[in-house]
Length: 355
Ligand code: UD1
Image (cartoon, rainbow, N blue to C red; front, side, top):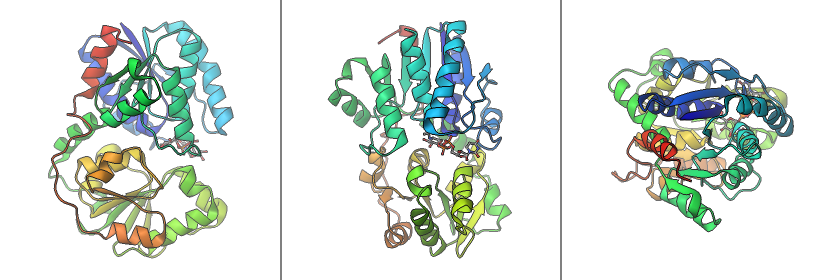
């Protein structure tokens, strides 16, 4: 069997790592296509190296652009790649422009397409990720859902017959990396001379947080006024938008730092007092590490993190300050994101050809 994975953005490389490993272990041929949506070494190459992912077989090099131009360039380029490789399955990941482009290319060429992390919904139709995931789910032949809630969303949309609950592949990576670094000091804590447990880790990159200058300024001021140092691991998008709008990020408690490789990110979250983020993946990673999180959004797809008390949604400066400094919630051994073996299940399901 031949699986062809299409990836392009940072969180997809993390999800690719356990799939690549499980495919190799099962003796399955695995072709990796990198669209080039993320091209900075810190957003791309570093993940391939440190997570031991095979180098991409094909690199489309599309780079940045408006949604239409970026997605269109990928779609045009993918036709030739899929026709050349003729995979048994095209596997697409998450909810980026790379995901929807690959799903559309595959379905139009009548090549079976499976969507990993299917069924997540924010029900916020202004989010580019929501458009991407809804369109991808409805185009795909096989929907690999990470949670029971995702399964229910797919059933409600009439897609239950194509859905399989496999668990969350990010949990696979996270548990493996957590166990590797257990007890090791956080390089970020040493570099910035912080005291473990006395800082927050923040990431802000979504269009809803960065593109409106007033909103970005409000978030920056909220973080700058927090009660502990806040290390903002700054995605290039937030730096570019802050520069464009003349917003000073390095102020008060707020310290700007470049994005971290995966092991260092996990070590820095484990050493922190809490996470403040608009990232989907980081909310869940912090929950799995049992680090309290404040999510700077109106809603989350990972509703279990909120229901279990480890994640609080906060929008205004006051809400962010109150949520970040709240006491840690009650301990829980709930495991809504699976057992860390989702990738093996994905490969099994693909091998069975189950639709
Ligand atoms: C994309 C995904 C988002 C995901 C995020 C993970 C879409 C619609 N969004 O957002 O769901 O959470 O990746 O990080 O697909 N840039 C660079 N270097 C890079 C890549 C981007 O400087 O390597 C800058 C460019 O200014 C670019 C901007 O970041 O215009 C936005 O990049 P883009 O790929 O459009 O979306 P992300 O914000 O990264």
